[in-house]
Amino acid sequence: MTTSDDPQLYGGWQPERSSYLGELSLGGLVLVAGAGLAVMMPIYLHRWVGEIAAVPVALVLLALVYVPVRGISGVEWLSLAVRHQINVARRRNVFLSGLFAPRRSDGTQPMDLPGVLARLRLLSVPTGAGEELGVVFDPRTNCYSAVMEVRFPGLALVDTTKANARVGAWGAFLRSHCVEGGPIVRIAVHDRSLPDDGTALMAWTAKHLDPTAPQHVRDLVADLTADAAPVAAARRTYLTITMSATRARLAVKGAGGGELGACAVLVRELLAMQSSIAGADLEVVTHLTSRDLAEVIRTAYDPHAIPVLAAHAAAAQAPDWQGLPPGVEEELAGPAAAERHWSHYRHDHATSRTYHVHRWPEGRVYASVLQPLLKSGGDVTRSFTMTYECLSPRTARTVLRRERTKRDVKRRVRAQGGKIESLDERQDLAHAQEQDSARVAGHGIVRFTGLVTVTVDSHDPHRLATAHAQMLKDAADSGVVLRELVGVQDAAFAAAALPLGLGLPEKRRAL
Image 1 (cartoon, rainbow, N blue to C red):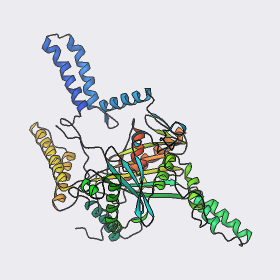
Image 2: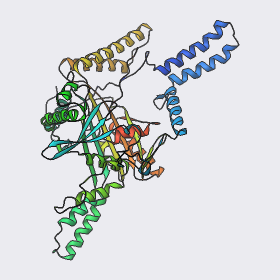
Image 3: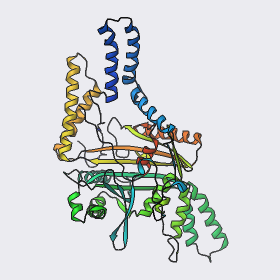
Image 4: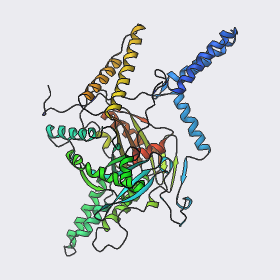
């Protein structure tokens, strides 16, 4: 029996399997039907010579369905390749802003972002006491997202009891949103590890250095700062809370309706969760304003802007500062140019590659298992995003019952066919039963996924290949399996490298 002094282990994650029949998607089902039709038609028509041509065609169709390549079936590869080539032929994979950006009737330029981000709007909402909150509005889903920068003390240098308590408090925070009809539909944690050239450190040192100090002391401090700054690494962690105005329509109507009413309800929700956030040992550094959000977007697309903006933010701390406040104007948030390729994404002076955590560790692991993925690698920027969608008790009961039924039926069918049940299938069923037991005991059930992006501040393919190899090694050290999101690198970058509240795809129900 484990005690509070024993390290807590975690495991039992269940992957979602979307299918129309058995393990087949709609495209796979059509190909299997086509293969069967190709074989049966010559027999039905009594044209036995045609069977010679029909059998190879059927084998090719079945191979597209059942023979995976790098974890993806042939039909999925075909679909991705066709859509990608169509977009390339129509130049839809290229984005140009700047002089080519649209303008409002008054001559001002709105925030101009590529791809799936083009529909987003950035709102500035007053929260009282002269403070403002930046809110990301997605009109397609009618969702409003607020972002706060947080600081976590970590798990590395604390005793086991406190580490277990911190992880448990985070679980309690997620469980508090597993309620019926709750307005919060998505919670995302975004961690960005980026190289720090020391601009902010040198600016702070120059500001606080006594001008009357001896020259040799000032030279020594300057040398130490110059040597230490380039090896430093900066880390930023953001917590994104997304509210559905559709779910909270009554509260929004009571707050005045429209965007202002929805933002007022979101501010109320943020204030209500402050105690639970503090209970998870998360320190809220600041709630991001619209200028802060624009800076986060800008630095993700153009890492070369980081030292300039860091120097600007350091200079803006002076009491006699007369320039612009820290951050970036809304119209300067996006990239000047971007181009999506098959396996990478070029934006301004940088190149990125995004991965999806395809499989989590098989066994039970410690809470610090993902630490290798979060480390910074020299001049490479890494962004890791964990997105959670909390399920209500009713939805969780339905989902888990369906998963247990599917696994049990599959197990019985294999047994009737005389096939031996594999250990993997037995373990999946045990995990499903364990999750259902946890739900009955009062625990919350969440959908979640992990995305990670590596960005190099150049278009050199060799540097990107080196960062790719290092990422795969760190993923192996963490016990996870990463999959490159080929063909959709721009949308993947938006979800992984930007804390804007983009969510999980809806799970398709099997027929």
